[in-house]
Picture (cartoon, one colour):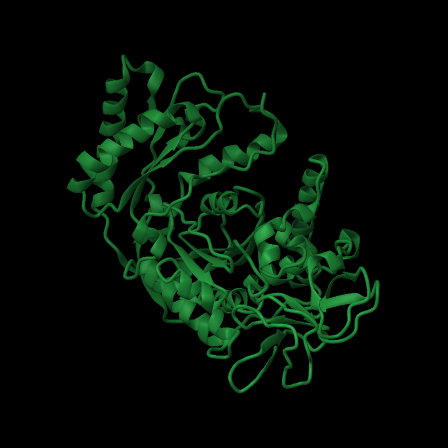
Length: 511
């Protein structure tokens, strides 16, 4: 990565690969028309921060290259020193599935990273929690109001008696009734709800609140259909008895959870989800590379690391299938890409719908550029497994967990897959958080970290300005993950109680 700047750090642009014919303006506030870089490049017009400047003349229909990859084609001639915005770039075709190389460039395993631990809660199934929470599952949206009322009373009247339990979380959702319960794709929301309750941060104390007439029977969510894990509201003689029944079952589980204590656990017990939201042009050169470096450290320590967001992987899939550890994993990656292609086609849209107005304001011209920056979160380790939406992780190492790119849908699915910590990068900024697992927020720019000093947990913007290296920020993040997992440091989202609702992915019909 080349950083072009003057002695005063102004003006400043970054060129990621020697093949690139564009640079990304780093300077806060952008650069005015007439700015001259030390290399002699002169800007023909003002270029906003994060946006691209042509480093060479680019003819009409010629490739525009970033990260050493084609991100689009010039719709008209672009002179050296010109601002390149989305209106000048045509979207290239996605990589063809049938042309993808599989397991041809499997990275060699890096040396093991030994001796790193955190303080966590051991579960009977072998998983480890980073929080000690009572999670109350619902089988249908109809019960959400009653449960939320009960949870409020549980927090006020019961939780203070159980100081070792951090929180009570209602796992509410919009599924359960009025749905095609036997449709093939209904397996996605059903297994998501089922696996959410089994997140390691809930300690295995299962509790289900159902209505009684829903299509998703509560017995499908309880352990072996155990009736002592279910409160059915239609069996109650009134509202107050409903609330008392929920509170009585919750009290039993709170008592068990309260006996738990943190113990020293190996870093291999971590299951870390990686996600980005409010992405900008710096995501792929600061925060995501640092996260990728930390991901490699976690894999070396024996942990499970999952990256996601199909539409933000699809256009870079040709860079991932060669890293699949074997043919089966490579085929599974392709299967998830094809499934989502078909899903979007049936909805009469395509992957270009992913890129948001905020992404574009932050300098990303299209989904191809966004994808190339997104996959950097995966680091350099071999991809050892692939999860369909809502499946639970069982392998150690780097895993692709297929999810939509929506922040809260992806977060919900990663919780179902078993994460006990999430790392979330952002360039534009978002107060996103999860009640069930700590979310470490990493900023791509210094300006965002300064603006949101009480929301951003780690600033990777120093990489762009040359104040820190990718490796230094990666190590800092790795250590922060261990501290947050141990409960010795609290994320800003948890500090303020900023927690998004769960959002199921349901591609099946609603009747």
